[in-house]
Image (cartoon, rainbow over all chains, first blue to last red; front, side):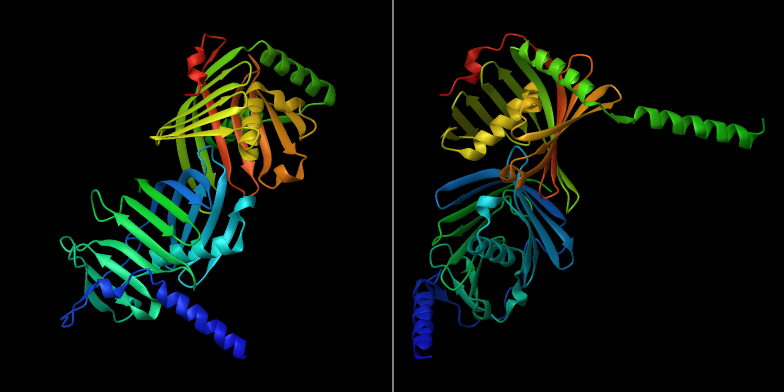
Amino acid sequence: MRSLRYLSAILLFVAVSCSPVKKSTLTEVKHDDKALEWESPFSKDFDKAMFKASLDVRGKHLSGIALIKKTSDTSFHFSFANEIGMTYFDLELWKDSYRCDYVFGPLNKKAFLNILQHDFRILLFTGSFCGNPSHYKDPVTLDNIYFYSASSLFAYFNKENGKLTRLAGWSNLLDAVLIGLEYTQGPFPSGINIMNPRIGMLLDLNLLGR
Amino acid sequence: MNKIGLFCLFAFCVCLTFRSSGQVKALSSADAEMVKKSIAEAAKSTVSLESAFIQTKELSVIKEQIVSKGTFYLKKNRLLRWEYTYPFAYLIIYNNDRIYVKDEDKENHISLQSNKVFREVNNILVGAVQGTLLQDTKNFQCSIFDQHDQFRALLIPVNEKLRGSISEITLFFSKSDYTVGTLVMREASGDYTRIEFMSKKINQNIPDEKFAIP
């Protein structure tokens, strides 16, 4: 029991000391009239989107085409196949759970799939409904940053157009996730990159069509 | 004959036509061997092959399709250029034991000896297009069917490891020249990829530079 307490304390220390964003580098906005209301770009009228995709994980490089499709009001499907058409993996995602319909043998690692599904659930199911946020500003870009303590999530918004540009949170107790969103035209991101620094995973998604 | 009688006769004829056009007949082992021999002979006399292709990946669970297009070049021996032009540019060159991949600006060199997945994919692609997979009894169980104006070869992987990713490969050969017109690769996941070859150019000069690895 005692050792379990020590272990929990160590894990908590690691988690706090390795926060994906250091709050001390941000400027806090103390008197906030009204917090921004926002939703994931994959909510509301989103149906499906096809991306050119590349995944780098532990020195392995995979590329191909990925498809994200809204399969119901509460679920999404994420499929990733190589250029020749062979499926790498096929995940069904809900807000609090997921199901792996298929995974290509060498990628069938529980830890990897857990991180991946968690990253996608952050991307697909976040919004201002995550709780009451603390408001910060980036001292350089002056972009607005909201921190949701209940889910340990930072959400960045462009100061000019108000678009969601970055999400930073945790995939698990030890690994942070940084999700960048780029826009070339319209309200839907043309590029998304998902990075887990600790396991060395980088997933790049470039929009091909909707 | 009244109107109802005429309608029934018409409906019967339509049914008969559809039935005969879609008729599939499994060939006896002797006939299957004859077809395999003809395909092998056609492959033997094919020094080079250039073909446009349309690839359709069917995602079975969500009932969606991903369509890609490009051109395919094959030259004896073991030279293959697989060039996608849609929905984005992507190039794979197999030159004997070396593989070159160009993904927009990114270039990658891979050794076929060290990469098992690429080696398997290469063997399947080359073997499927040349028809030599039909002779590969070590890895596939092959059945041949007579289907309208084509022969359909159904290949079931015998190798358990291969069966973990591919459940079956179907090749459609033209009865006129015994070359592959369509390749369907069905995965263990239930998804399948259909590659249709068109505007085929057989034994026309393809410069070696097409297969050169920079």
